[in-house]
Amino acid sequence: GPRADRVLVQSGEVLGWIDMAMLPWQTGADPRDATVSALLTWHSDASDLLRDSRAYLSVAIYDPETNALWVDGDAGPVAAASLAKTLIVMTAVQQREARGEGIDDLVGLFDMMITVSDNEATDALWAEVGGRDGVRAFLEANRFPGFEFPSAADWGAASADAGSWATLFATLGSGRLLPQEPTQMLLELLQQVIDQHSWGVLTPADDRLAIGKNGWYADGEPTMQRVNGAAFLAQRDGPPGVMPMVAVVMSHYPVEAGEAWGQQAAEAFAAAALAC
Image 1 (cartoon, helix red, strand yellow):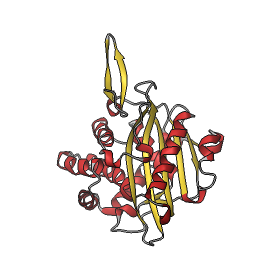
Image 2 (cartoon, helix red, strand yellow):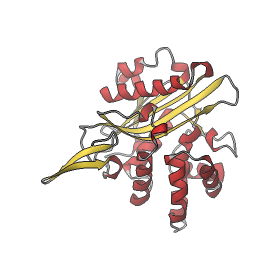
Image 3 (tube, helix red, strand yellow):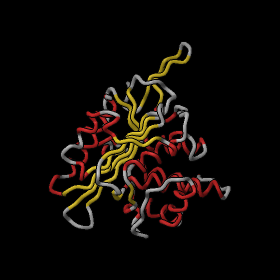
């Protein structure tokens, strides 16, 4: 039956469910040139979710139809934790492409990093791309400002606000960042994230399509923790072949609130965004 990561498509007399990541998404403008506005100017309900927690959250919505980016929250930049794994994959793909080399030997690492969030595979690929120097070079070459790397050894410390992550994901989804085959591969891996990691902005729902990546870990100081997520979101009855909106929620908040606080905040924001 239908799943939260599939869309119903009709071609001629054939009707069937297609994996969300397999559709050739298109967008008319470059997300890196998006108009940036305060979230309140887009929809007050989504902004209202931050009323009592603005200091702990950084949120963003990218709309491909208008090439607009809405942002809010004062928490950023926030260390990405496992969300950084998506950035490392993009860097590895583009480095290999620049050298005229294939990525067949890396696909297994990509799979482990994204679908089950394996940290040892990420350590190996972090070394492969040249650590933070390699990732910084990728970001600079592709016009993605706003990322910080306080640690040469800790890829999870890569930090940015939600708007920077939304722009990165939107550019990936637009097909402007990587060639078609590796773009398709990464989107399919994001669609195959295991159930245990499908929470927050990735929470499944009957009326929702959602694929992406989450990340979480306790801060170096034991009083704070981070819970992050970035996803492509769409209503199930939305038009196929059109890139979905991108929703990102980064949170950095007191540990006594529990991991569930960050997950619930992200889930509520995604639901409000889709309802707008």
